[in-house]
Amino acid sequence: MDDEAEFPVWLAEAAIGLADGDVDAWMEMYADDAVHEFPFAAAGDVRRLEGKSRIRAYMAAMDGSVQFGALDDITVRELGEEVVIEAEGHHFDAATGDPFDIRYLWIIERRDGLVTRLKDYMGPRRPVGGAA
Image (tube, rainbow, N blue to C red; front, side, top):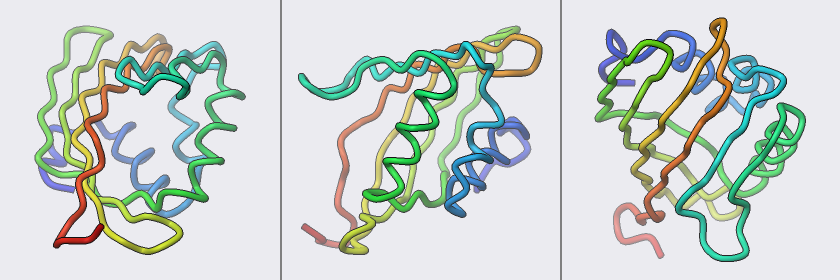
């Protein structure tokens, strides 16, 4: 990851765990009553997950479709208990191995060091190197 000095340690550890296929490492950052939202989700897609167990089930299901990779081009703005992060994700389609990139904007609220709300604004998948 680039800009590690700015990237919050708790989120860097969670992202590294997810890239290693360890959903539990990603889940360590969430409070039990956390909410994970996808405000730009397409019609019919999941827009809101309430509770750590629902978030975990969703992330575990993603393991079959996405191999999470590195994040870079990271910008972090900390505003008390709220953190705003912009990042570029470099991932792979789990079925084909084709690389793709996604631009993220996360608005994260925390309480007692744990994520209570994550608004996950994702851009569309962009193929890398002409992959379809």
